[in-house]
Image 1 (tube, rainbow, N blue to C red):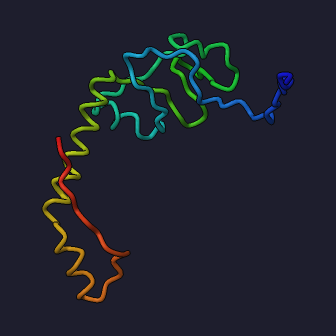
Image 2 (cartoon, rainbow, N blue to C red; image 1 turned 30 degrees about the horizontal axis):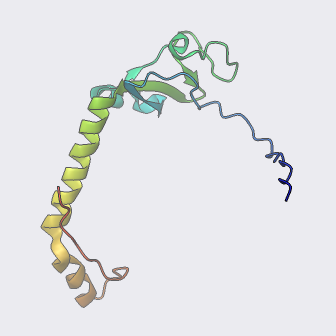
Length: 129
């Protein structure tokens, strides 16, 4: 029995994504943030990224404007250490868990008794740490 010939599969052409980063430092998490929200995000540990830092200075879709900050239309590229990002995610997850524990399953049942739409049954389970 002969081995079948290899078939080359051609994928459709897609528009290049100007927000995709080719060169990233693995020690940081990157995020495109709206200009209006940059000051708030700086309080959360985000800092702006220079376009030369990640090889965006050659990309015509990413304008430097008056400064060397990586910017695409109304978005500015920011970074923060991955460890800080993980700590922030853990904080948010813990906060959400405390809210769900405080509400308990009684909240959902009370909504059904009061005639509110409750979107089906909700079962709360303790997550093993």
